Image 1 (cartoon, rainbow, N blue to C red):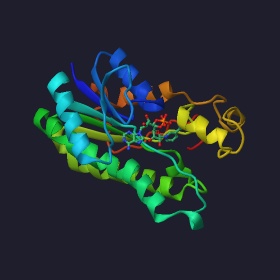
Image 2 (cartoon, rainbow, N blue to C red):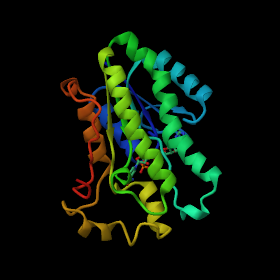
Image 3 (spheres, rainbow, N blue to C red):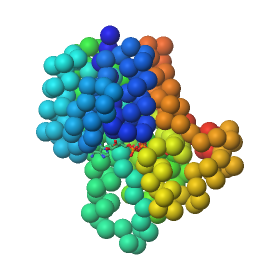
Length: 234
Ligand SMILES: NC(=O)c1ccc[n+]([C@@H]2O[C@H](COP(=O)([O-])OP(=O)(O)OC[C@H]3O[C@@H](n4cnc5c(N)ncnc54)[C@H](O)[C@@H]3O)[C@@H](O)[C@H]2O)c1
């Protein structure tokens, strides 16, 4: 059975992806600042290459080569652009974009060796719509979509597919924290009316898309940005 690494697997979307892949029979490891409790958990910061490499070594040791990578680790940020410090800008880019760089590069040798791989990057619907007061976040997630397309072209001949899933309004600790700070324009439930399918998104909705994209039968799908947002972004 194949081994999957899920970054951000300690909470929210990443945790749901880890649980889904485990239920589907994959060997699953998580890489997060916090332990996941559900899979082989590595505590590491995606911005620190040495920590990522050490985590990868431990995962390989325990579960074998990693041929599936889901990059879900991420952080949000809310600041009027003129008040945004360069340090805050840089931190969001570092976690959301550079973290993907480190994790893909660290895992790639296993996929190249196997002649098979699946990478799914969790970006954001805000990269499609834009979002005020989130310039750093939107820039980082747009870059992840671009990186996805470039890597799909580069890695396709090696049997590796690379896709992105940009979620919109998924009920996770990140979204609830933003709600409690009054940063999302009302409550999470208020957004149901603005959502064509008339419900709040669940982490399991993103996990289902990831499960499909990493499957054998999705092998002809690469470089795609598969929105999972209840129809809010089309
Ligand atoms: N919830 C939404 O509505 C929504 C919408 C669009 C995009 N997203 C994206 O989905 C992904 C998951 O978000 P979520 O809503 O589940 O949030 P979450 O806060 O519940 O989970 C994010 C996880 O990433 C981990 N993480 C953060 N920085 C890290 C670092 N430097 N190194 C390792 N791990 C780190 C956190 O510890 C946490 O466990 C994020 O990339 C987020 O930007 C979420």
